[in-house]
Length: 272
Image (cartoon, rainbow, N blue to C red; front, top):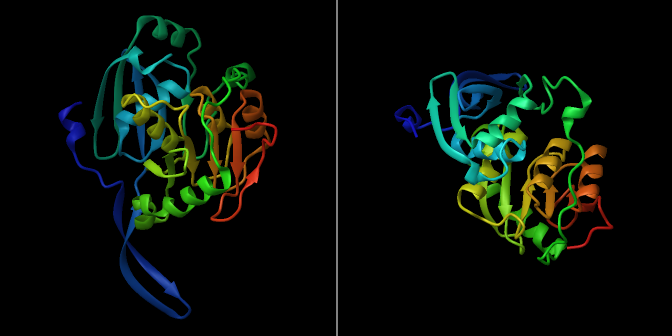
């Protein structure tokens, strides 16, 4: 980790605003979610520039490398340096030569945005929408109870959301729904990458819990979770049709509209 990475970033900035309510106005200082370009560099070659919240960038880089299939495992990442500046950041990774050769073979110009996971892809084949079926889950999850517990507990882990109102959260839950880790970012897929990177860095078995997201269930979230063999992906809002197709093909349970006492199961044929 570089010295520049030691700069403390809260994940939000202060901006002068004017609040309007009815006919009254008030000048104030507001907290706004921070968003900067983050360049992800592999073996000296820039592969992607993602718009992200500048916190937990090492975990973000690990998660991105894993969920995008750039490396086969966290052990293939030999070094990771974060260079954090005022208005941008760079994360430089050294990866195994065989993974780097594979990356060069399928390299694409990818420029990410907060709500986009396919910008810059130049062919349909590069979308990689065919996840391999995962082994049957070895854990039992009581869905109503676990999802209710996760739903009830998520807010207390959303520190940036409470400060800004403008970020997503990705939480790792035990089978009973207890939230063990949570990460926030302006981009929902970035938050999931940060979470997965943290789990990988700490050697946590991703088949032994589930992910709870404060967002809709988009295809890229389902694809990332399926690639890591996460047995259950739960979201607060609805999934897309493609997310359901990916989850079904992978054998991953996908649920949406999770509330304290309700949820919708979009993969009823898959059991946990």
